[in-house]
Length: 220
Image 1 (cartoon, rainbow, N blue to C red):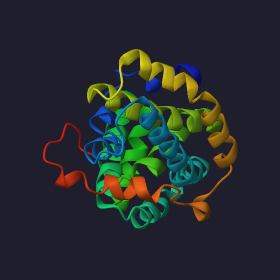
Image 2 (image 1 turned 60 degrees about the vertical axis):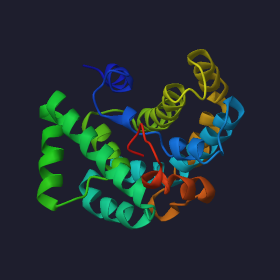
Image 3 (image 1 turned 45 degrees about the vertical axis):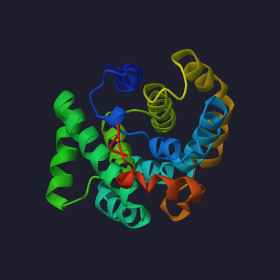
Image 4 (image 1 turned 60 degrees about the horizontal axis):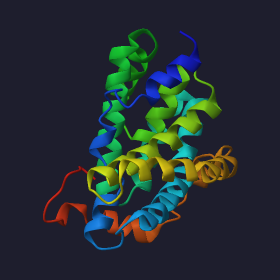
């Protein structure tokens, strides 16, 4: 199977990685009254994409370029994610993504999982994502685009399920975000782990309140 087909399979909403169990902090922002409709969702996903670019892609990039460095990059992610909700979500998503890919692509990804387990990593999502996409022989830029696209889709899907936006509005927002996706990719595609940054501290603080919400649809 060519890498282009693999990208389409990984991008499929039916690919069972558990990503739709997470809202990326949107649920907390909605319940705190900071997100009330489509305009606010757009503002939220713009910040989320920059967070994915500056706080996620550096780890994806370095893990794709040097999969053997996964333990060190995982440890760096463990320190960088000081928000306990985001920290837990990163580990949950990373483990689910790795386990799913190892089951579906055992020859390519099974060894990655075995080495990660032997090294005692905590399975943070961004470095695991980079190492897995390298093992699947997906080009780095395609891996970067997929990481950003899945981040955007996950938040918009959460917005639909919470009733903050409708299905058509979700896709309108996704379409409108295309220039921003290109901008974030252009700014962040060459970054490495030493460039990690948190560009949206307010949204990060709101996301950290997730465990104290009265009712919850999502894990984060």
